[in-house]
Image 1 (cartoon, rainbow, N blue to C red):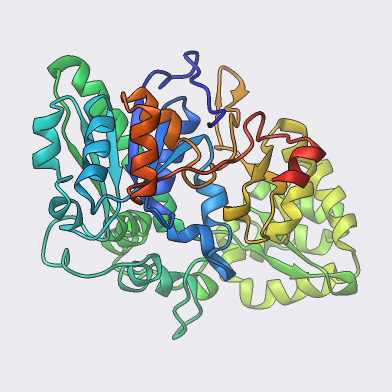
Image 2 (spheres, one colour; image 1 turned 180 degrees about the vertical axis):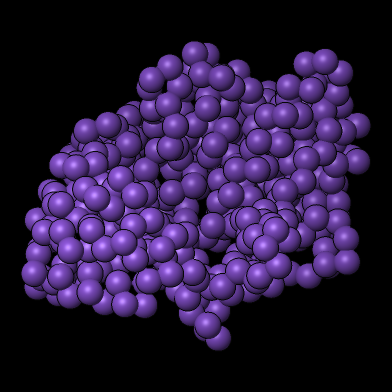
Length: 424
């Protein structure tokens, strides 16, 4: 049985969410609600969510987006499996899914059917497109980045490039969660649930809306980021001593004076041709090469210390794996210890690591990780017992392949003992 405990002190403590989701978008929605205190029950196929077995760039999907959840493994193609899901949904506040349009209707789990079963149910669908001419298409994050202008803006001229993470999947799931929260608030007044839809393409359009508005305001098309005309003269990556790289920004006239004083550039500080930021932007063609040459004499550590000392923006060029040891994240509780079960680690055994928490605080506190991702079917037995199934009925359903139970050590999955790890 899972050790995910309800926390009534959290905003959605006492809420029950049932999700049939996979990949990133749908699981993100459930993770947000789970982190905020909801009991989130992940209904998985008998073989498990396919992302448990993904490798390569998908190896981190399941472990990242399925914490604080329970798992029940059910064959929903069997009428007995659908009956179990219906019983779960009869007492649920939210149902979340992100399968191809029409899939839930064929299973008897579409909004029309479930709203009759439970009129208070908030039904959240995560799709590639909101209803319209494109809604028959199969969408992926990369697909909508290409067709929605984001890949064009990210890559150099003629080389569209997807962003370096699943931005639309993650944000689409977040907007699904926001929609669920709005619908739950409205239910307080109406007593009724409703259908909420979130979509990858529309999310991507929202991301590039600032560039659309730039064109509307200026009449000039936004250039891709690598070739854009920056609003600030110094706002770029610099190669410095020993081949290191660092991002530096000088975004005001006051900052320009501080920068020149700190790095011995008195001649540039007094040059009337570049006295203002807009003048410096116009002079970038000759100014930046001069600055790049000058900064090559300093190490990234030296520049960082100077910029931090005088309050100028800077950033080291960091790889994702470096963030596990980031001193700010460690000091502020931004990372939580977590253990991935064997069927989600890809290692054939439990893996102890850290995971990033939601980037917010409530009353000055980060939202805690109450449990790591569940093993497949970890909560099947306990949930069926809650629904009134006897041990004999559970045995029969298990032998018939309608449900699956997994024996995964209970206890604190966020900080397991060495013995627990060795035996898992």
